[in-house]
Amino acid sequence: MSERITNHPVLGPIDMKKEVSFIFNGKIYKGYEGESIAAALLANNIRTLRYHEESGSPRGIYCNIGHCFECRVTVNEKQGQRACLTPLKEGMAIQSSGMLPTPVKEWRETYV
Amino acid sequence: MNQQDFLVCRCEEVTYNELMETASRNGCTARELKLRTRAGMGYCGGRTCRPLVQQITKKLEQAPHTRVTLKYQPPVRPISFGVLGGGEE
Amino acid sequence: MYDVIIIGAGPAGLSAATTSANEGLNVLVIDEYMKAGGRLLGQLYEEPDGTYWNGIKESNHLYEQARRSGAEIKLRNSVHNIEKSGDVWLVYTERATYETSHLLLATGAAESPLPVPGWTLPGVMSVGAAQVMTNVHRVKPGKRGVIIGVNPLAAVIASELQMAGVEVAALTLPQMNGLNEEAANPKQVMNQLLHVAHMAPSALIRQGSKWMKPSIMQQLGITFYPKSGFKMWGIPVHLRKAVTEILGDEKVAAVKLATVKPNGDVIEGTEEIITCDFVCIAGGLYPLTELAAVAGCPFYLVEELGGYVPLHNERMETALDGLYVAGNITGIEGAKIAIAQGVTAGLTMASNHGVPGLEARIDQSIKEIEHTRDSAPFHFHPDVKKGKQIVQEKWEEMMKAEQPL
Image (tube, rainbow over all chains, first blue to last red; front, side, top):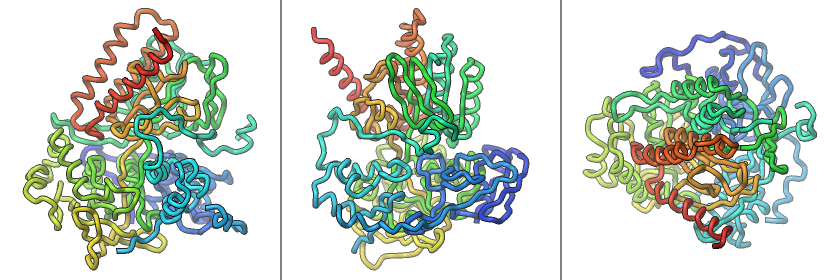
């Protein structure tokens, strides 16, 4: 389980920010306005942000700074948004993507 | 102890064994290995696994401190066709 | 049309922005992150003098300085391509295309992974990801974590996690494979640690002095290759164990750890399970050079600098007219060096733009980079100075080849 670090021995108390509600995969959660979607979800103990398009394996944040795109989610119907780079807003609707039908997957065997 | 296979390229789900076998069978450069297996050619543009793919082919490639141009193609971040066409996001 | 566009609002980019804007140039800084500061944001460590280097504070300071100098800073915008058209550099972003005479790439570094079976499970993240989650977002990456990869960056972040109340169950090696021969070999890892400790006992030891009295040097010296490991700031460090697999169905539940021989080979039958709810992968940093590559810069692989670096000179100019580099794109080093490089890049751009009389300050700023490097408490790569020298020699070779006597 994850939790917020409200007090830190060197960094001090956490900035009090405005609490907002958002929807992730149809359920309502609370987070702080302006924090990254990835942070808000992790604070709600949610680690799985999407499933791999081909294999369906679960994926969560990996690099947390926009390089790896593992945390991409659909935000207010816009696909491919990096949860680690997108600030949370009141009423945001976030959806994780899942496995897609890929009937022509086995091309590789011919070429590798 | 037998090494379990594992993914190297997370985006295209290319495994270690697949990369090693392809590299040894074809004597690949990093670029050829990418093109044959799709490792490093997925959504992230190779930012995560590129050093690993280069590691595999290092022994076959040029000596250190040789001048090279790196093969990167734009866009270096995924963009929608709308943005590419100069329109709105 | 801008005089200067800077890609990356980290320490190098922000200091270059301030410097060039203060010389009267019209400056735009672009970064895809939601806050300015780059990797500096997450940094938090104790200086040899006992004060804390607080990355958030330092980032805010650099950001405010750049703003006050008149530089425009656009965050949350990704650059996907750059291109030269005549004398103008075109910068293609998600939101718009910008034009500039001088383009500085200050894109920093990306993390190299150390893949092991199970590393795509949610809960496995780069060590930098855990650092940002903890220090910047103030959310614990988990309750109890295992860090794969034993190196200075991993050790510093482990202590940061502990400071924030997150338990680090172990720092340990990855099982050896064809991709990680250095990071998985106990002997090599030990040598690297000794090298770092020798160069800068203060950075590694003082930081932990509040938690641990005996020095890491003593520990390393007395018990060479201890199978039981040793403790650093109370965190178990295992150089004779390696993670063979990360376990879990939907998310991380545990790691499988095995004892390894000094050469990294797993000893059969020694597997043990360590429960944890997150795993960090600490494979080190490499210069993030993709835009320099797209532009067509010549590159050299310089292991001492962390990977491929674009050819550049001491003034931070690349081989392409109007294209500059500063910060970790030129080699993996600390934020203070990036700041110093940003000053040089800012002055060089101003000088090339026609601001007169900057030569002495440029020379002085180059000396300042070297001075900062010499006084750094530790180096990510012990031979960084050699790496810098190689790049410098390659630059001189190019100049000779292009301007025959």
